Image (cartoon, rainbow, N blue to C red; front, side, top):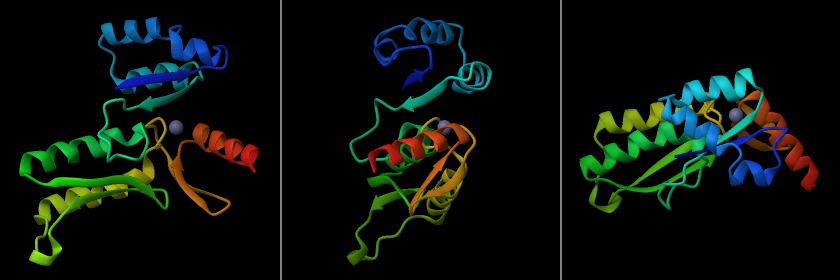
Length: 162
Ligand SMILES: [Zn+2]
C-alpha cells in the first residue's frame, strides 16, 4: 500500500514524485504504523493524506481508505473458497459482493455473512479517502463517508465541477 500525502506546501509534482517519499521511507523504516503516520501527518502537521491501495484487485472500486475493511474479507473469502464479485461504494457505504450460485441455492456461512455486514456497517465510520474517523455525509444528493477534511475537499471539488 502506498500513502500519498497532500501537504499544502508541496506542489502536486513533488508529492507524487518524491519529496514526501523520503519522509514516508523514514517512517516505514522506523516501523511506524499507518495510525502513527496519520497521527503525525494529518493530526499534527495538518497535511491531507490519502491512502492509495495500489495492489487492490480489479473488482475493488472503492478508495483505499477502506482497505482495512475489505482486505481481511477478501483474504477470508479466498481461504474459504469463495469468489469476490465486487467491492464498491453505494449510498456512502461499502458494499461487498460474493459470487454465489443462487440458482443452486448456494449461500454464505452465517459467520462470513455477519463479518461482511459488520464491515459494511463500519464503513460508515471510516473515511473512504484516508481511513480516519468519519461520518456519513450528503451533498446535493451524493452520499459519501468522509472525515472533516475530506468532507470539505469533496464538497469543493464537486462544487467546482458544477
Ligand atoms: Zn479523510
